[in-house]
Image (cartoon, rainbow, N blue to C red; front, side):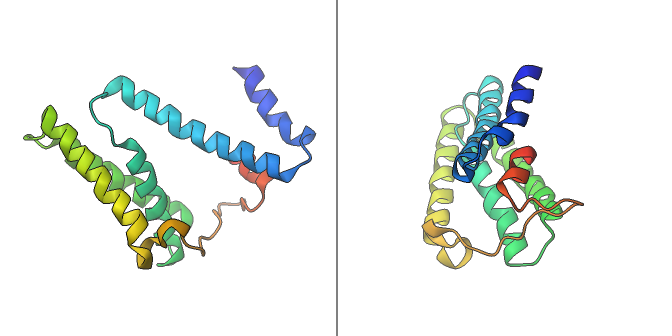
Length: 151
């Protein structure tokens, strides 16, 4: 484990191509999401919706920072709390058991996908939207190198 961490910490010193470092950062983000999905599948395999919560959290924090001027950290915390509340409501509704729960989450996934793609004024559609500010807290993650160490 420590060997892998040391290897990942030293990669930017060897890798000179910024494109490859950007790809490595994306791989790191997707690994974080996959680890969340894996732990979710081990705990509640009957709910197929956590990737939508990832998307809703990303769009929610981006909208709060770009459109409403929230600082990045409070926007992420507020969005995570809102997504936890939505997941709690969806997952703990007393009438959503078995097949009903599966149908409700599939419907939820369809609605969320439609919102992501069709509601251009809010989400920017398939192209997303510009204007998200970088995360500040003593450090600014404005380069691929800094973002690599954040991930």
